[in-house]
Image (cartoon, rainbow, N blue to C red; front, top):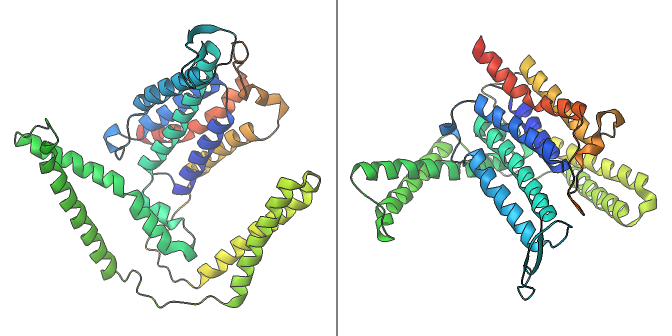
Length: 342
C-alpha cells in the first residue's frame, strides 16, 4: 500500500499533465497509463460506485466531440451544413471542430481516471490525516461527506439484490418504494451509529479556544498580502516581480498562521505513516512527469504538447522523450505488479 501523500502527488500530476496537454497522442498515452494503473490495483468491484473508465470515456468523448462540432463552426474540412435558422447550431459542421471536441473529451477522461484511481486506493481516514491540525475537525467532516455517496450506492445495490431475490421487479415509479424506504432507513441508521461512535470517542468535547491576537493579525496580514500581490500581478504588468514576492510572503504568513493555530489542537495518532522506498519511487516518477510538462526544457519537445486542428486538420507530432517522461506516471502500476510477483 502506497502512502497517501505519494498518491496525492500522483493524482495532482495526472491533473496537471492532462490540463497541459492538447495533443491527442499524449492524451491517449495518459489514458492508457491511468487505465493500467487502475487495473493493477485490484478488481473493479472495489471502485466505490464510480463508473468504468472506458464507459466514461465513450460517453465523455462522444458528447464533447458532438457538442463542439455542432456549436463551433470553424475549420476548412466541412462535413455538412445545418440550417442557419437553428440558434447556435446553424452553420457548417467541420472535422476540425469534431477533433477539437474529441481532444477535450480525452483530457476529461484522463482527469476522471486519475480521480477514480485515487478514490479507490486511498482510504478516507488517511486523507483526513493530511488536514492541518487546525482544521482537523473540518477534515473529519469532509471525509465523512466523501464517503456518503459511495456508501449510499453500495446500500442501494444490496437492497436491489435483496429485493430481486424476493421476486421484486422495477416496472414503474411505485415499484421504487420498496427500495427507497429501506435505503433511507439504512442511511439514517448508519448516520446515528456514526454519531454515537463519535460522541463515545469524545469528538468535539473540547472547550472553545480563542486564538491570540497576534495569530489573528498574522492571518490578516497574510490574506492582505495575497490580495495585494494578486491585484499587482493582474493589473500592473510591470510589477510582476514585486507582486510575486508579495504573493509568496502572503502564502508564508498564512501557512505560518495555520501551523501556529494547529499547535494548540490536541491530536492523537494511533498509527504513524511510514514513507517507504516505493513511495519515493512514485514521487520521483511523478516529479519527472510534472517537470516535463511544466518546465521549459527545450530538448524534450515540450512544444509538442500543444496541438490545434484549426484551421485545417493535420497530424499531431509525438516526441519520444516527452512520451518517455510521461511514463513516470506508470511507477505505481510497476510497484503494484512487482509487489504481487514476489
